[in-house]
Length: 441
Image (cartoon, rainbow, N blue to C red; front, side, top):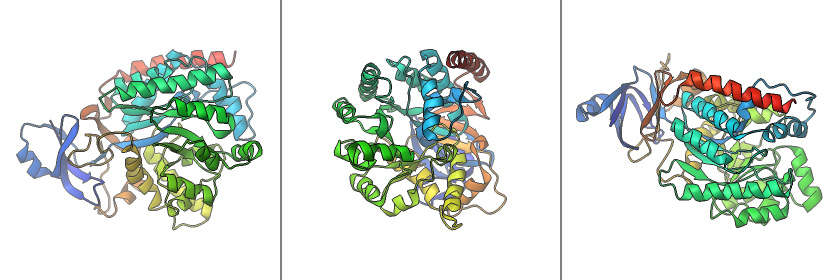
């Protein structure tokens, strides 16, 4: 049992806020949230974690990441000179994923999950690709999550781009992880059917993916770039969301990622099917594919969550960029103040609840004990009505000093407790160098 207290508590349970509060955890769950003095007296036997006047918050959820992309940091590829998004895919990402080994998967997973812990992210939905060696590659990622103590939902990127054998191996890798996760009673590991994007997926492939889902949802990129839409219209005479709908992709708890280039009819179809869209503002800007019309989607009733697409593991950084991109894109300084924090702090929790058994992203009795502390000391008054403004302008991932997931302390005083970080980074550099040599051979 832990008593995490002596700090301001943002519960995300409505606007409930404690100026000097505490969270009591017992096992994997939160037992009670309230005033620090009262809970300290009530639970004298609990191990005390001192927030030291900082802010106590729920662990953060990332609804879309690409762990394998970590080893692209600092990489220079011979002859790489992209002119558009398709050039970026073919010239960098597909070259990388065709060279990834199990060792690369292992170390990139450990490194990314470690970084997630350091940024207060306790739940990660990941979308993996390593076409050099597909079978059991998701186990490399799952083992990393377990080693760092992070809750995760995994899938493999099915695509037709590398031929029939690789396509089928990808489908079966998803099926294997789905079945593994369904037999895992820890509620720390989930599996989905991962798919790349419409322009690399035939109708035959969509059908076969559905046949191996076992009730799991699909995690797929949708209309990220304009070429994806043009391809769908040319080959199938349909826009992407309608094509996926006609092929049964949105049956079950599926995720439509990006949706930068969809129209109102597609938004309405996503709303009708209850399919969430995951917004990745930094990645969309970096790839110059456009600003997704997610504010319009929300008006149409679509549940929009927030992810990073591998661009960063700091969700508070993505919060800042998401707040700005829509103001810039619409030339309207009044937008996105409420919508982006709703995506991050409310909708991500709602979407994650479709996969995990207990509530996440909230501090209340019965929720999973995913708790973080930041060292933020507000220079202006802070209460339940203005916490988002304080987070937006006053915090980032490096403000996090303590991270707990599933009732286990993973980081304290900025020191990871489940792994030797310096040794890990040394091993990561060696593994990455081997990968880089292969890519540029």
